[in-house]
Image 1 (tube, rainbow, N blue to C red):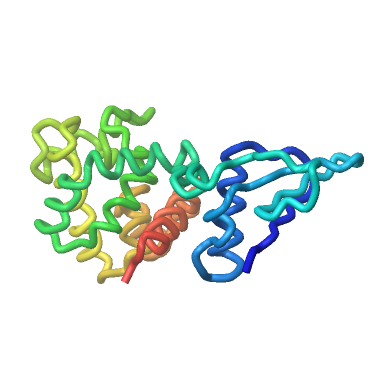
Image 2: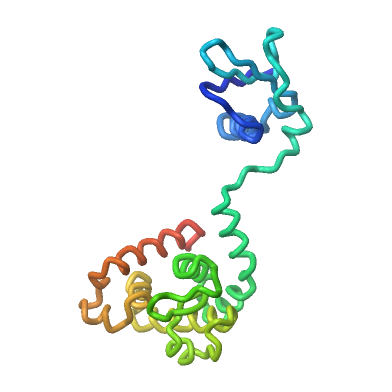
Length: 217
């Protein structure tokens, strides 16, 4: 059975038509998008409302997208998502190695890296923390990174430091992350609670949310 699609109001671009076609079939019905197997036609009424269909009912409809284009057009991905995915892929082996060394989940390390440096291995904070996991030079050396700017050494040292903090705070991830951001002494001074620092109180929920979104166990 042929299926009609109506979109209203306003203008819609060529890639958006593909998105509409995909969303209609998968998002609304949970099945393969039927309209994507046909040409998509468009007409605009006097009020500026646009209608899309694969079954044109009058000569006012014009071809907007061919069947072959609608089947083969790539999905639309935001630039932020592309940048994140590229960074994640670039450092995937480094993270995997550090996770194997420490027993920490890869998704947790990815969450920390995303929050700390957004996968920028050359990042340097105003306080002097460097690299993917934003380690202070002294901390990096203590946990085996002779060159804190080297991605592999940085992530491995950061993972070992986070593992140590988890041990120190009885596997309490919230406190370990707070200590990673503000220092373990600050957590102890706060009677083993997240210190009352605005940055830390933003940082901990952000990492936990990234970790949860990435499939935390």
